[in-house]
Amino acid sequence: LIVSGGVISVFGIVLAGFLLAKRAMFPIQAAWEKQQQFVSDVSHELRSPLTGIYSNAELMLRYPDRSIREECHRINAIMQESKRMTKLIASLLTLARSDSGKSDLSLGVINLSAVVHEVVSHFEVFKELNDISLAVTIAPAVEIIGDKDRLHQLLVILLDNAFKFTPAGGQVAVACHIAKKNAIVSVSDTGVGIVPENVPRIFDRFFRGDKSRSRNAGGTGLGLAIAQWIVEKHGGRIDVKSSLGKGTNFIVSFPLPKKTAGPGRTETDKK
Ligand code: ADP
Image (cartoon, rainbow, N blue to C red):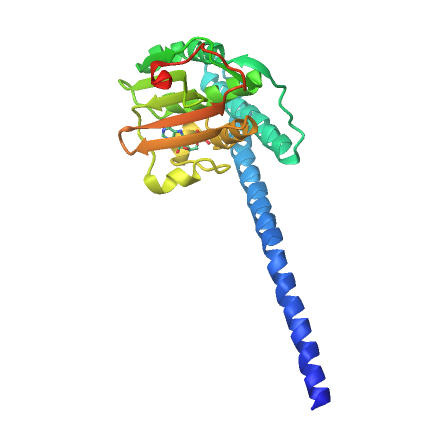
């Protein structure tokens, strides 16, 4: 009995050890699976523009007597695919640096109103090209502590999406102001909206609600993952409200620097 009791207790200890080890392995296994999925997504995303470049070049070689004018569409396709790859690689580098913790922001007092102004002015041309109206309300001199280039990148991502997912005749509205002791940037559109079950997934890497639409518009599915990282690095938060077929509103809020005085304060905030 003593011996069999001993056997039982040894067995019990081994079993408990095994179960504990297995439990401890869960997060490692989940991280490993996530990493595997990421590598597979990256390979897939890189392969498709490469295939486009290769096949167009191959077809051009097949008819060496054709003029550049005749092959213009193929050259254009090669250029577009190369552009997509460049964008994808730049986004992957940003995310890789963010993962390794090597991407420190170069922080300083930033005039957020001026950054929003600057980015919005670059989008004036899209407004005309796509027949989309652009409403802009920017309070003067809203200041935060931030990295100007990253904030610029964040706004480009949000505005780019707003224009991409809004059909002709629609409206994009951008606002920047102070409310409840935060600097707020809001980008809203009257576009296609997001399917409710997709809303929690839009910040995931490589998530694209409508792959072909996003791809045709040069999307990589990495924009919002980068946007979220930038906002979090600034100690802020990004929220989204969307109504299918009606439009989407991204609201970003940043903490204000400790001693911010009056400028940029809106009537809503003063109340
Ligand atoms: P993409 O390169 O596809 O734009 P993002 O990471 O920027 O990748 O966005 C992920 C997905 O979120 C998009 O494919 C789209 O389904 C959805 N999305 C983002 N912004 C909007 C928007 N303004 N309106 C509708 N859907 C949007």
